[in-house]
Image 1 (cartoon, rainbow, N blue to C red):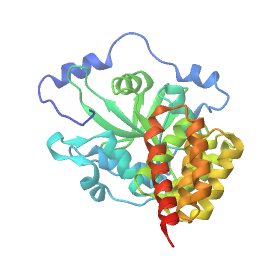
Image 2: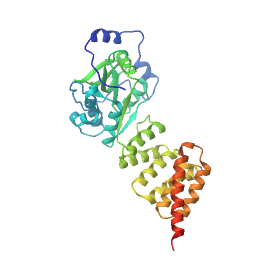
Image 3: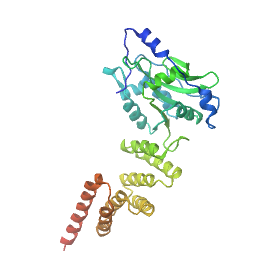
Amino acid sequence: MRFEQRRRFAVAALLSLALCGCGGISLTRIAANDSRLPTSIELEATPFHPQVEYQCGPAALATALGASGVSVAPDELVAKVFVPELRGSLQAEMVAATRGYDRLAYRVEPSVQGLLAALADRRPVLVLQNLGVESVPIWHYAVVVGYDAGHNRLLLRSGKDRRLIMSARRFEGSWRRAQRWGVVVVKPDELPASATATAYMEAAAGLEAANRLDAALAAYRAAAARWPEESVAVLGIGNVHYRQERLQDAEADFRAVLEQEPRHAVARNNLAQVLLEQGRPEEALREIEAARSSLTDPRFAEVLAATESAIRAALAERSSQP
């Protein structure tokens, strides 16, 4: 678990240990080896919300949401993300609150290069840092808004500082000790330039799981446009249409998946369910039998069995009618 925490003893000594040490990291070298990266960038328009004690989570999240077009004050987020007994915010609550505003929290690649790529894409990055040491952590949320490769430093909205300058070595150490957790907050129809299909689809599925169906639909559609070869995006569209009771649209979506992958057992199961709810149990039975014959993942066996049971019950009821 990650949470903000204050330890009143030996803080100065511990921070001294955390900030010294061997080695370093060169932003100049990273930028020179990646043509996507300018030598410096600062997202000056990123809003700023000063931190109230123990509440850097709400302040940092309000900053990231504001950059995505959601105007929200930290006070409005306290009840959503702040855990009083921990005096801080957990990452899961931060992501869940983001979804509540129809925004997608996309995990950036856990490397300094991935962080710089997000900034080059003009997206501030909400990060978790450990400003202490492993044995006595001091957890802190901030928003990285830029970097200067020539001076080997990063720029952050952090605590009460609108423009905190932190050396790359110091930042990387604090970020590494927090498992390099960082997200960009984006509108559901926007894809980060460096997004991967798997990671983006997982983030979109989070919106669906949170019942933010319109936002999830927009995210799945964006994914389908970016990665037309990924049938899971179209499957996601069909699932959302089904939950919105748009059965004809869902049927078309699941058939589109099957055109691309005829042995996709889950899509065929879902098609069978849609056909059943449209009063077409005979067609549904053919589809569920085909799904069962093509199933390779035993985790879905119970789902297919339940669908088939419902279909056979509907057929039996129909045959018993005069």
